[in-house]
Figure 1: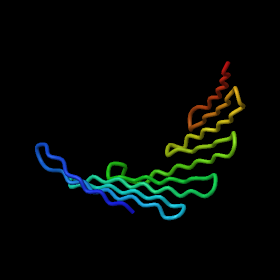
Figure 2: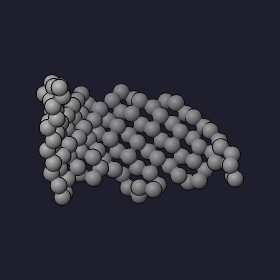
Figure 3: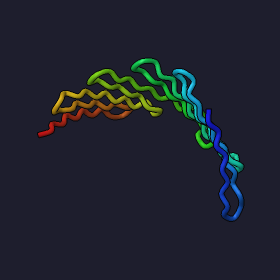
Figure 4: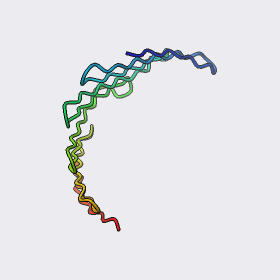
Length: 111
């Protein structure tokens, strides 16, 4: 993988280190700095499906999202359990979005 270290000077020096690597179907990136801030992202891709886990010191726990795409159809579930289903009909698009409180359907035609 790739390791990057950088420093910035303002009122105090902040040192940041970042690492990213792709190992087959798994991509990982980690970043941390001298202010005890850190972020971690891991994405596993298997064919048309990808699952992403994100965590940070601010989040206090992992957020999981997933996506599927095949041809004209795509489906995504985000960390807030919002589900988006999209279908490309050529010159028109159909989209359904649902979450814990609302469901919306949008049909868009291009001329």
